[in-house]
Structure formats: C-alpha cells, structure tokens
Amino acid sequence: MIALAVGGALLSLCLAGCGQSSTQNTQAAGTTETTQTTTQNTQTTAAAQNTQTAAAAQNTQSTAAGSSLSGTITVSGSSALLPLAQAAADEFKTTNPNISMTLNAGGSGTGLKQVSDGSVDIGMSDVFAEEKLDASTAAALTDHQVCVITMAAIVNNDVGSTVNSLTKQQLIDVFSGKTTNWKDVGGPDEKILLVTRPDTSGTRALFTKWALDGTSENSSASYLETDNSGELLQTIKDNKGAIGYLALSYLVNNTDVTPISIDGVAPTLENTYSGKYPVWGYEHMYTKGQPSAAAQAYLDFITSSDYSSKMEAQGYGVASKMTVKR
Image 1: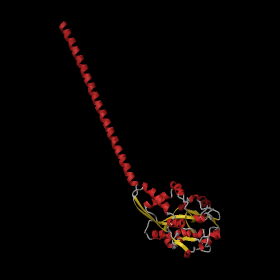
Image 2 (image 1 turned 60 degrees about the horizontal axis):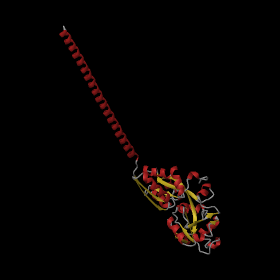
Image 3 (image 1 turned 120 degrees about the vertical axis):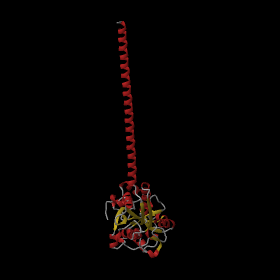
Image 4 (image 1 turned 60 degrees about the vertical axis):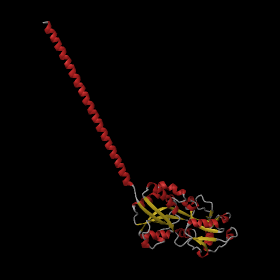
C-alpha cells in the first residue's frame, strides 16, 4: 500500500513536471514565432517605405527634368533697351542654364528687320513696328511691350555748368542747326557740336517726335553720327560744346554729362509717370508670330512684377505706373 502510494505520488509529480515543461516550450515557441513575425513585418514595412522613398525621388527627378527648358534665343535691335535686356538675360539664365542667349544692339530698325526675316528670335524697338516697316510686314510681328523708356538730351559738363534747362523751342533750334553757339542760350561762347543718330535709330525717331515736334535734325552739321549709346555718351563727355540724347538708363549714377530739362521739367521716372516730361515711349520686344517656349519664358520673366523693381533701379519705367497713355 505504501509502495503504491509512493508510486502514485511520483507519477503525479512526473506528470505535473512534464505538463509544465510542455507549456513552457509552447510559450517559448509562440514567443519566437511572434518575434519572427514582428521582425518580418518590420522588414516588410521598411522595404515598402524604401520603395516609396525611391519612387518619390524618381518622381522628383522626372518633374525637375520635365520642367527644365533648353534652346537658344537670339536678340537684336534697340541700344536703349539692350542694358535691361542683358541684365534680365543674365538673371534668367541662372534658373535656366540650358538656354543660350545672344544679344546685340544695332538700332530698332535693324532689330525689326532681322526678326521679320527670321535672323533673330526677338527684335527690340523703341517705336512701334508700323513706324519702321510696311504694314504687311509689321502685321506679321507680335508686340510684347516690356517697359517705358525716357529719353534725355545731354550736354558736356562744361556747358552744363551754366545750361541745364532749355525750352522746347530752344532745343529744336539747337538740333535743327538754327542755333550754333551756346552763348545764344545763356551758355559759354562755344560752338555747338551735334552728336546725332542714324535714320534707323528708334531713339532718334522717339526724340524727334516728342522733343523736337517732328523737326529733322541737322545731320549735315553733325560732329558724329552713331547709334551706339556708349560711344555717344563718351563723345559728349570728352568734347566741349557737345550735345546729344540717349535713354535715361545710361544716366543712372552717372555724373560725366549733364541732362537737360525741357521747359524746366527734368527727365526723371517720376516726371515721366505723371506725364509732365514729354519725351518717352514704350520699349518693345517683337517676335515673328508666337515665340518659342524658351523665348516666351524669357519674355514672361522680364515683364514680371518681381522684376519691375530691378527695372526701375536701372532707369526704366514700369508701364503700369503711367498715368498717361500713348
């Protein structure tokens, strides 16, 4: 009896021990499986995230590549507009490095002729195309008005020390050759040296119309004829008695020559905006029909509101600020 009891107790202990061991093994196995499953899920999630990140990067690269522009843009024409066009081109190319641009002056007439015959993509002009081209040729061009340009008569500083304002009639008499000595308008006893521009010049057309009331310049008495504004400025600076005219943009921070007021009104942007100063016009960039994507992007940039403050800093007027229209 005692042996049976002991045996039963041992059997019970054995069975209990075996049961605990089995349960622990089962729990351990379950924990291992859970850990493995969690690890697999984590790896799967990480892999998915990596895939999404890679896809996003590819999409970004594709978008960047798809939005970039390339090509060439050729521009010629107005020397008055050239400084603004060049400055805008330099900034434009910083965000459009795959676009190549070539800009030259030559005068409004040259720019209009070259854009008409397809030699350039953009023709710059100080005047409307109809003033330089026949009606049918002008009709084939698309006008993109860029800004307002103010033209100023300038004299050598030797003259400017005593003469810095002329009436419109005095100005007409000087450029038509009627007045030949500065003493006749209150200046020094010096011969007047006219520095004029060729017939193809849009600056000349604008100045003749609004400063001289259509009176022709006395080109036969001209000391020098040039449509290079830089050369004109230097010539007037270096020669006593010299007078000419150029865009206000060439006079920003420049004390080498003296600008001439007309009837007491100075050639400034403020006086141009108000309509007090009469010698101004619109600057145009013409294309033959609709421009290329690259040319359109450049035109959009130079006429944007973001660029307008930089435009004024260079001496060019913002068309939307004009209180008078032409």
